[in-house]
Image (tube, rainbow, N blue to C red; front, side, top):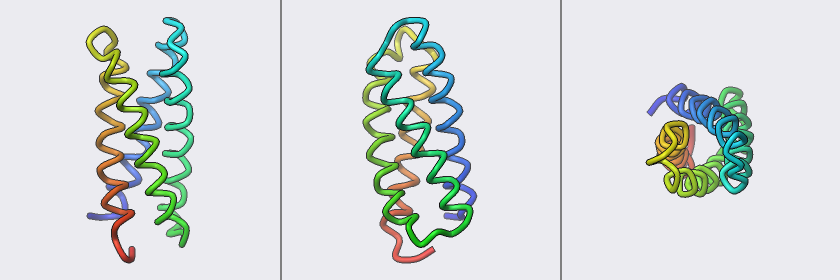
Length: 108
């Protein structure tokens, strides 16, 4: 796995979370909004840490994966009725998988 895979997955997750937030504001889906905001923020930070090879990226990948899983679990509840929630759940799962792999690597 290369560094750009992680950065790309994190940034894709940011974009889908922000789109989901916008749609969920219209629907009044507070639980989804709150999780997507946390997820978008942690993914953006994770991409930055990875880009600069921060020695703290390991710990951040672990937290990012946890938040992405929580966000995916919430968004999947609405996926049948909202395309943005479906896309968000998929992006979050992918990001969580990649971050989990990075958090278990002994070095970058």
